[in-house]
Image (cartoon, rainbow, N blue to C red):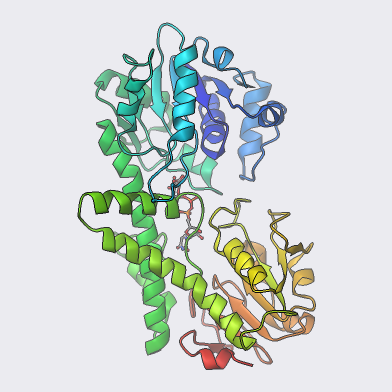
Length: 441
Ligand code: UGA
């Protein structure tokens, strides 16, 4: 059993803490937010993540996990310190290391002896392992870049079944020691240098983003030529060289990771004078997907959204999370509000957002709406029946941004499916996105 300090009680920090505690380690988690520390200490996870409250509860009740605002207390006796602070996007696309520097400064001021191994878990700017040397007291500390690959909504499952564990360090022994913390998971371990580990994280997310935009372009072509996008993409993904994940077309990718890491790698690519147009195109296709949905609504109402009620179903960037960062649904809500529309939203996990009204259910959101748009594939939206929606709505425009609605009978509706044909036959009169006149009233 090892004593592990974790700096940052966000999505990554809490999942790793609860997960490592369940593997038999003692976890001491530090966060500067006293409210968060209080909540987590009593078992309340401040964000929505399936299975995490139970896992945390087990660690709290057997005393293997504790939370504190004190670096001195949290770092005491630690053999490892996992750095899990956010690195948001800067205006130029690079990653902002302000919080990372702040955390390193506090770690340096409280570093215990013997010195723990420092582990970068959250995504850090490429080259951050070198940054540590700037902090007096940390010059001789061993550093391991070990990026996480947890996806929100399945983070606990991902923790216990990692596709690989990356440990990047100039000190082979330190890398092996970090890998040994996860030994019970029997995962494949890749030992490399820190820069390679840091770049790998950005490359991984950039590739997933590229797959989503690729799927959206193929779906657009399929709609135009009359092919079935679903069959095309599902069959494509069956090739093990390609893989089936991140090939669902629709409103595009959001969240705190894919857009940010794509911008960061694009910036690196332009510095290296290679490949930046590739990443720019991926981002542009993604933006265009959202714009398409917006244009369909605006065109439908002849350019005037005032006095129109638009129901947005789903504002979390994906199901099983309450995260709205860079969420296509939340960005659409912003756009509709900016154009003067009355926006009502429903999301099973998100309770408030901006100035939009929040309805208690999808049906209540749709009641009296002029247009309904499904922006997140929450499972409960699969149960929505188009004719029921028709009966509730004042208007007739329904946009399915995720290909989840049952389209058995779309009569009386103008029904636009941004992922036409995906995963079902869709026998209603879906309007091709390329044919916007069909969506005009
Ligand atoms: C992503 C990566 O998948 C994780 O491996 C990584 O650890 C994490 O970022 C991170 O850097 O921390 P996450 O952002 O939680 O995880 O979500 P994804 O499941 O990758 O989905 C990202 C976005 O793409 C979502 O908005 C989702 O709706 C969209 N998406 C995903 C599609 O539009 N189509 C798909 O087929 C798949």
